[in-house]
Image 1: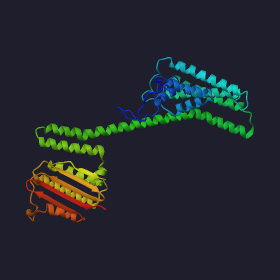
Image 2 (image 1 turned 90 degrees about the vertical axis):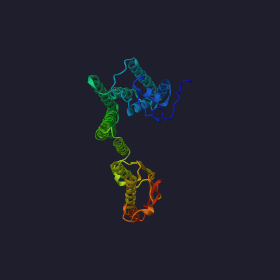
Image 3 (image 1 turned 180 degrees about the vertical axis):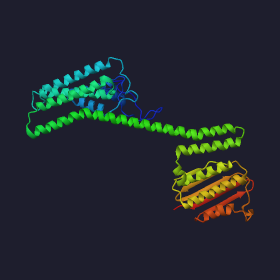
Image 4 (image 1 turned 135 degrees about the vertical axis):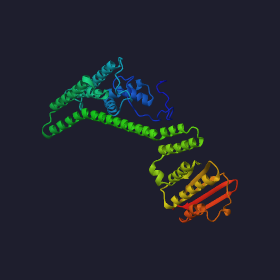
Length: 398
C-alpha cells in the first residue's frame, strides 16, 4: 500500500491555494477525468479511485450515479476546456471501459430480474440507451459544442435519450392516471438529462465571461489612473530634475495619492476622521513641501464637528511648523480610543517661548486653542527654543 497516498499540506506554499477547488484534468483522463480529478484532489493514486468506483458500480450501480453526478457539477481545469484532446489511446480505452462497465452492470441487473423486485429486461435496455445518449450529449457539452462533430454528438445523444424514454413509456403496462403520470415523469427526466448539463455549462460560460469583463474593466481603470497621475508626475520630475526639493515634493505627493487610491476611497477621505487628517496633511505638504506622514491608532469613525475642529487645529499646527520651525518634516500622531480623539504634531525645529508670543499673533490663539475649545476640547502647546515644539489637541467624540 506504500505510495497509495501522497503527502498533502493545508498550508499555502508558493502561491498554491490551501484548499483547492475540485476540477477535472484532461491529462491522464480515461473518460471524463472524474477519477483522475478525485485522485489529484484527495492525494490518492488514481488506480484506487477507479477500483472503488468500479466496485460501487458492480454492487448496485451507485458508482455510475456518483461518477455522473460529479461529472455534471464539476468543471475542467482552467485553460483546458478549449484545448484539443490529447493524442493518446486514452479515449479508446475510455469507450471500452464504459462498454465493459455497462455490460457488467447490465448482467448484474439481469440476474436480479429472475428474483422478486428486480428490473425487467424490457426496462433495462431503454435505460442503457438513455444512459448512452446522456453520455454522448454530456461529452459534447464538456468539450464544447463546436463543429459538425460536436453538434452531431448532441443530436445523437438527444435522440437516444428520447428514444429510450419512448420505449420506457411503451413498455409500461399501467393504465389511466398512473400511465399519464409516468409519461410526465419520464419526459421531464429525459429533458433534465439533456437540459441540466447544457444549462450548467451556459451558466459557467456566462460567469467566466463576466469575470473576464470585470478584469478587463479593472485593467482599463488602472491604466487610466496611471496615465493621469503617475506618468504625468514622472514627466514633471524629469523636467525638474535639477530641483531636488521640487522632485521630492512631487514624489511624496504622488506616493500619498497612489496609496490613497489603492487602499482608500474619496468618500472615506472626506467622511472619516483619519481620512480627513491624512487629507489635511497632504494639503500642507503640497503647499509648503513639508514632509508629513501621519500615524493613526484606533478605530476610525465618521467625521463629526468636534473631530473636524481637531483636524483643522492640527492642520494649522502643521502650517506653523512649515512657516516657522525651519525643518523639512514633522511627526503627526492621532489616537482615537474610547470616544476620545487626540492629535499630536511634533517637530524638532527652532522652538519658541509660548509666553513671549505677541498678543496680535492669532495663529495659535484662534486657529488652534479657540477652534478646539469651542467644541469642548483642549489644546496644549509645549515648546523649548532650540529643541522643537509639540502641539496636542484633544476632543471628546461621544
